[in-house]
Image (cartoon, rainbow, N blue to C red; front, side, top):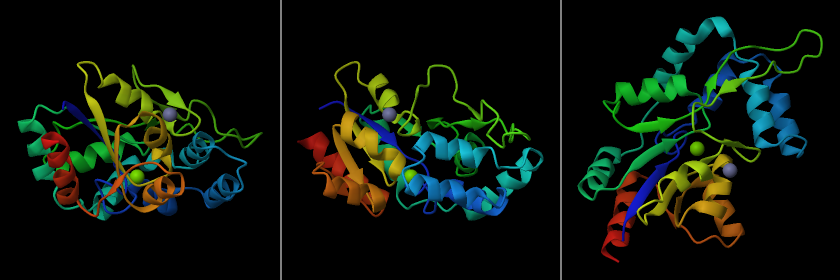
Length: 225
Ligand SMILES: [Mg+2]
Ligand SMILES: [Zn+2]
């Protein structure tokens, strides 16, 4: 079987959700109102992202980057998993709804600059002083990247790109921005945390992981199967 691997970043590659930590520390104090609106189904994922990004201070990017590095700890086993993928000709892409500046910084620090990733780049355009709405665009997504209401940056579209050649898609993730790819696009879902619960509650076939050794074992058995 030919496979491709799509990896979530926050809470998957990293132990903690770096985006949440950055927003909690740097965003204007009303950031949590966005979370309330999302929980009340008044906001979709994309609106929540816009709410949060627009509340980050444009002049403190280097501080935010430093802080991200200080809270980023990698989940064990990633290097071995990437080696397994390389030796089996499996393309790997990190697809994140976090922020490109910290995904890039963390991967670089870990010696993983070669790992392909896509993530939104916040514009730090802030809020309209009259309406208090986010000034658009709040983020740039890059050429060839699609967006959707359910995730902001559409992980389904990224996965579909990797299919040519008959590859099946393995997706590894943990959170709400992973729901649509798990439901609609991935052939094999490896999940933890909120994504695991979502799969269980909705009858989506999945296996579970705590670290990337678990993920590597699962992929080995798919390759053998
Ligand atoms: Mg995540
Ligand atoms: Zn989508």
